[in-house]
Image 1 (cartoon, rainbow, N blue to C red):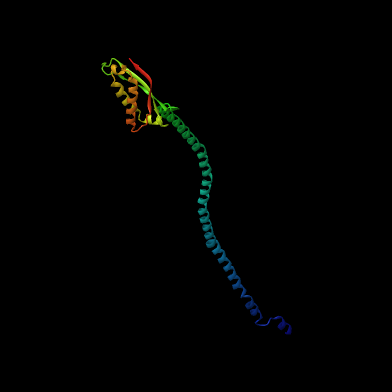
Image 2 (cartoon, helix red, strand yellow; image 1 turned 90 degrees about the horizontal axis):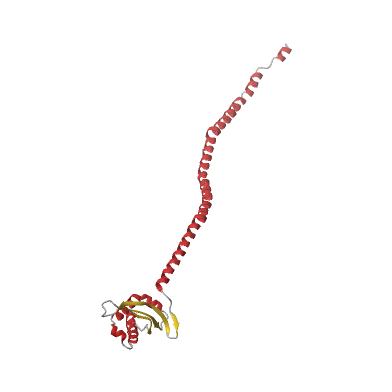
Length: 220
């Protein structure tokens, strides 16, 4: 009897064991649920947001890099184009300008005529010969006269060329008023020189012409 009593567990011991082990189960279940919830939040909420943000950053930085590459490659190309095309155009323009200047200078020189030369009498400038009909000959005879204008003004060449038309008209009027008798009169050439000097100074509004030297005097 005593042995059986010893082998039998005491009442209440089994239940205490069961009661002592039962609180771990809810703890384990709660831990598993927490881990699962954390994984779910990370998987379905955090990671998608991070991925979306990363894509937005990459998309925003892509045009900047493209623009930088475009400017990096485009600038040398533009510079290269300028160095080749622009330089050639500029050189051609300069060449044309030089040619135009050279041609223009030739025309101006041709218009200006010969330069005045300095002598002991002053600055001499040749005037182109003037021809006209002799008065009273019904156009059957004409007179041709060439002369040099003498002046104390070193710019006489420019002065004559600027007023050449007016001076030529004066010379034609004076010569055309001469008759055969006037031309054959003694001292007729001296009279002609003095008259040309006077009328030229009137045309130039000053005492610019000092004297007239005849270089050509022909009647035909």
